[in-house]
Length: 203
Image (cartoon, rainbow, N blue to C red; front, side, top):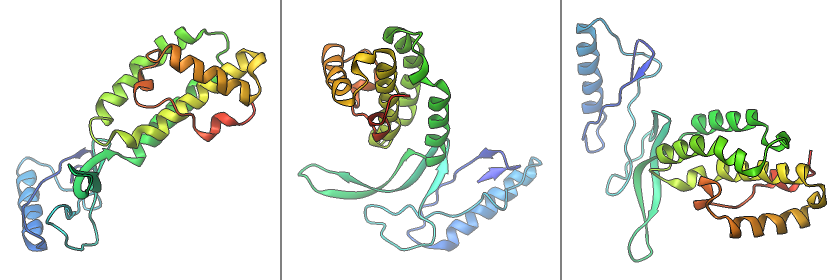
């Protein structure tokens, strides 16, 4: 929900799959907001069914976004190797898009004026913040973004060191680098894989 179209305010109602208590809760919240001069945004207010575990009903809306995360039914592996569907958060698509745009603006592959340790000092605090916030739940949802950063680092190396401009040599260099300095970049603790973008020509 949102007051005056700005601040998100989720509310939880243990309604056991019934819509009526949820709608009643929306009315109560709208009334309380009205008492302080605020209103519920009609386009941003909705009722989502928190499907997961023993709650297996079918409703038109089973997810919602809040503070950069999407809360939705997700499969998790439980003790014994089985899978259980739970209602849990993960980084939202819109948050991934914003972070991806920032990574693109860095233009790491063109910063051949910098050494690798300088790039690490530059981006590590930022990436660490993303990992600490969005990686608290469902860390694997961040993998595409982190692999994309690795792709830019690979392209940086191929531009800076022409002797490894060919991908086969760049891949060998990358493999030896992450083995020798596994903590050079904070996100290497999660993944050192390179997305397909790093496999093209060095430009």
